[in-house]
Image 1 (cartoon, rainbow, N blue to C red):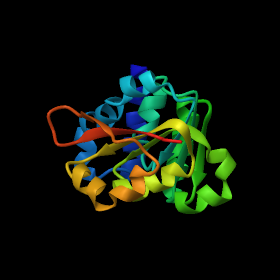
Image 2: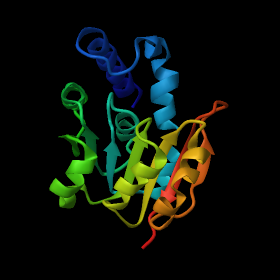
Image 3: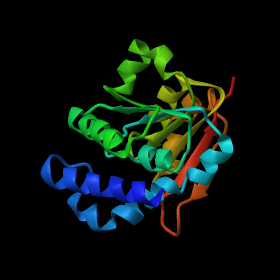
Image 4: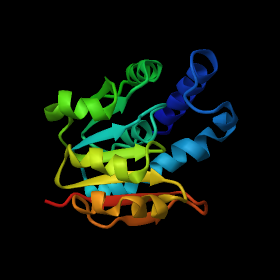
Length: 195
């Protein structure tokens, strides 16, 4: 696993410096702690939930999906990213790392949930540093099966985001279980899809 994570990090840095930004250049020196370790902070939780098919929204540079897949989480992944240059990186990384059962879709999830609804049906959903919680959960509710989970990596504003449109997400999701990531302000929020 460590060799694959190292290969992934090197691939990402090479692409970030030569082709297109996947992470900020200021974050390059903090790649392991800021991106890889934060992604892996959800590994034991997702292992416990045991989703078979996980859809990752806004996969970007592969976070949190690729570190989690490298760690053996999920039997099948679908990575959704709207920017073509980032999906090109994701496909290249999958090929170089020889990761199986991971599909990359280029497009906005708001559109894909209609166009690719059956392919996106899942029992696990992840998202890190994308949209606000309310709109994210509204999209996830359209594809996550009853009893499935949405796992969101969020910053210090999560509580405020959940209050903004609480009625929207509460009709489809249980109240979240929140786990802090290290000593910082970031956390992982787990929502269960109600019937």
